[in-house]
Length: 214
Image (cartoon, rainbow, N blue to C red; front, top):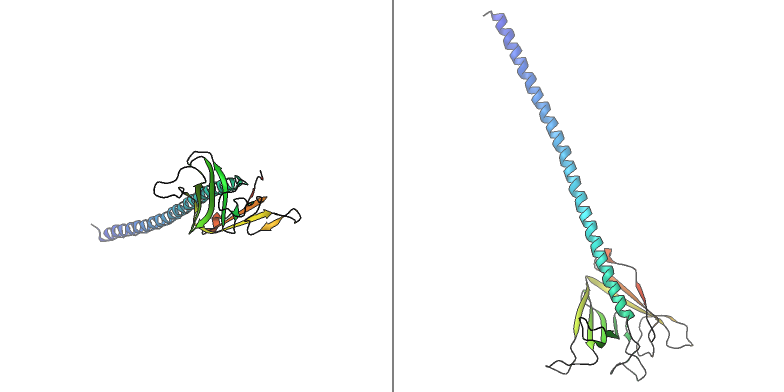
């Protein structure tokens, strides 16, 4: 074979190999770029999914919290201007309102609790908002003479409970908000319920409940 022709063939093969090598490098760069784009899309999708899940969970917790607070408000609204032994002076009703504890007389419809009048105590216990129900009449426990107590945890994760009372015990005095309402002859007109949570996202404006006087 002619040496010159042979050299030309070798040169063409070498050039083709260099061209193929350059094309492979370009393909590699393109692949890396596409991979980076896909990774960005995937990360963005996961982030959006996490945010959507968090929003749904927050909405669910908020709905549960609102429902529990409305249940407490309905319970307080059922307070009766009645008295019981040990409630205080002769003419005082069994409604004892403090800044963080409220006890009053209410009626049970006889579903999960024994029917009839109950002493109901709303208070904070640690990080929970609890309601105690004690029947004012009926059976006593066999072990002792104390009436049975039923305790219900209404809300958890509570930082502080603040209660307020609006009204007047003297017709000559203008109604106003007070921090306590005890040993009175009538119910307050309004009760304000403010619950602060450890998770501030659950906090809501105070709920104001109107009470029936008779």
